[in-house]
Length: 203
Image (tube, rainbow, N blue to C red):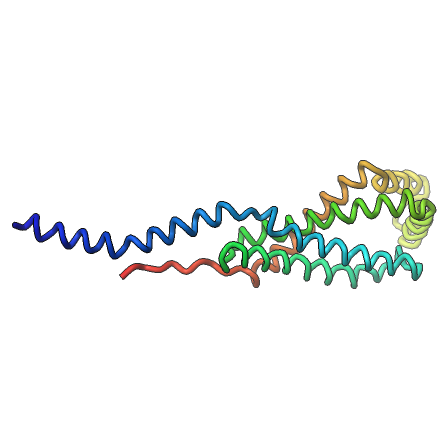
């Protein structure tokens, strides 16, 4: 008799909690099918295009190596990373852990760096090859103004820096530096963009 009383109660609880487990299983399956590499792709493309347009403006106005250019590109980069993080959060259901924010932000700038490295190769090798010599002159003047580099080491440092601007090293350095910068920025933006899932306790 006691067994008969327990069995309906157990069955009622199982039936009551079943939708919760089904919903949880569906959520897990949906998160597995959503790839961060896909959700951040278009935001990264948009970011890359905007940075290229800004670079074109710098080139047309003769400010390719202006030191103040970073004051424009950095805010745009931060906005693009945040956009990538928010897009990924929407695609996975509206929640975003801090780790997911780091990953989506880093990958966003990683993609954008690939786009920009391709543009840089076309710019320096096809559109205007004289830019490399202009860069060399700019670097020499910059190091001389700093005054902390011996003259005998100046040529060696400039030559090494210029080697990093030629393919395939330029592609590798651009992507690596982009991923690192994306991680650093995401460490900060992830604090504000993240939204941890709320643990619901079934009644």
